[in-house]
Length: 554
Image 1 (cartoon, rainbow, N blue to C red):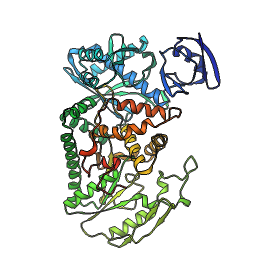
Image 2: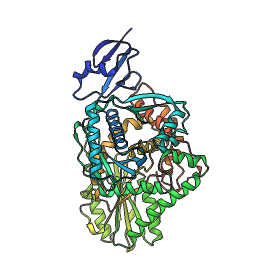
Image 3: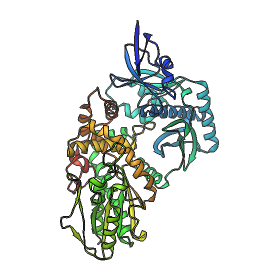
Image 4: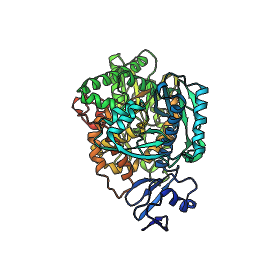
């Protein structure tokens, strides 16, 4: 029996069972890079190239320049690296090879065991991976019983995966095999090692960085210019999670099952308060009067600013909050973005001249009437909001451009204290499958958008690429300017957000582009046990997203 394949106006017929890798060859002239996956455009389902055709399909082939292609490439490279480590060292010497977080788009790997991850070892691992590439070995998908998977992971010493699968409901699971080495990965793989041509390994601190290609060019490695400040915060967050025994989803699930979730919540909230207190103390003993706070979307900037203000008051300092949004230019004079709509992300959308003049006057002891921006009318308004600073007063200014020196160029550097806020998740699915920080922020935003703005999950997912693009242009380049980087991720929050996010994700229609992302996030939540929000304090940053905060978070 033959089935038709339609792609970009071209149609061909193939015998049942013909692999998508073979079919992709006939359409390769439509793409400038290797095809890595197939997207069924009617059902919004991603297919691996090793799968055979079994019905008529309208498709789009995915390359490294597609998000799904890049994540598939990364998973495949990680699998090759893990096999190389285990092949060279042997299982007995390895405690864990942990994929912790990304740094500059590359992966920070922490190898643990009876060995030293030095240049000699990393050179051997790199060479072994290149051998795998030259050998063009297939990533074989194997469907087995879940209890059999648990047994296999135990034999390999992958105890995080063993514990994780004890919480899965499904009786069967797909694992991947590379020769005799087996592992589980959260998502599809490339068809074979021959596709993973561009990678490198390098020593960084006490771990290893797996370097991968640039988003726009699968043949050229990303530059490695790591943010030392950001790395330190991420590393410390993972270390703290490990110290309290909650370093992955399986550990969190176990705590929930054992009825210890309340203790975990209180411990995390106390840790958060301790960090805020340390920052407040630094400010209180110094001569800084302008606190500039910035961070990407859904990092909890508003709650952090309020909690900081409370702690400062405890040190005898009187804080005054000012939103940089109130200095937006009137809609009629605002620059337009590439889409022809008013650009809220650009620094040019802010009246920096007025902002700097007002702040200078405040520092000089004058009384200043501060503006409010009316988002409904698109105009700045004055409602009699006056402010005059006394000796123990400080300004807490929140806005996306606050770490950009151009934003506050008229203010003395000696008066400024900069804080970068981000939700840097310290919890992964298991030792080889990480939870991207962007996923956590997207889920936070989705829940808040629905509760406070009436947006659907589809709306939030659709707008997310534009939000991310604005962050890449206006926030991330300036994060190293911060005096302090503050992590607002709560180790328990995925279990709480699951209750709010899952119904929203299930509502995304199957026949829309956003369904693929909704389906991926739903699959992630399959691993997480739910946790009731009733135990979360009203001051918690999570309340900014799920509601019930006693702080003025809008």
